[in-house]
Length: 236
Image (cartoon, rainbow, N blue to C red):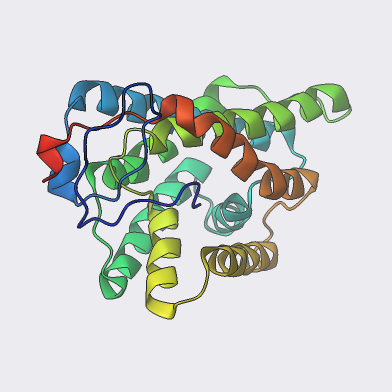
């Protein structure tokens, strides 16, 4: 998901005007680690990734439809008899292989994304009981809460600027290689994974539609509060 237009990786991080909001900068892996405030950035990244996994589990327990990529994950999990979090991790690493011909370079956040989200999903599903099928109000609350929490988590893990997630990197890589707009690439990917997920028995529903139309605006609105300003000298 592209939530803000990054500065090209060749650009320097220049000192910001006092009081000006922090901006997203597209840095290489080493520059990301040298850009300062690493302890805070790693902590926020991990919190965001854990919350992302919790939000996925909430939507699963709501049972009213999953996010587009999770429609695919749930279909694969049903066919292979694997836990949903395990499938999330496996698909993440498969997608990282697709980064190679696209010449995308993973950062530490990319690798942590591939590892932490799936584990957080498994733990959250183990701790969060499924509500009764007729408890519609509870299920709707889980669905809406999951979507809102996912928007918060997205802003939280993008803000530290430690690398794109595997799915976001696939999108941006295809955008660069094909010349198509990010919106077209994202829509094509999401339609494709939802279609494949449905063929595999994945769970499409109201939550899928609400997620697709609301996650971007929620994350975009929250991102300025979670974007961490980088140090200028480290990114030169």
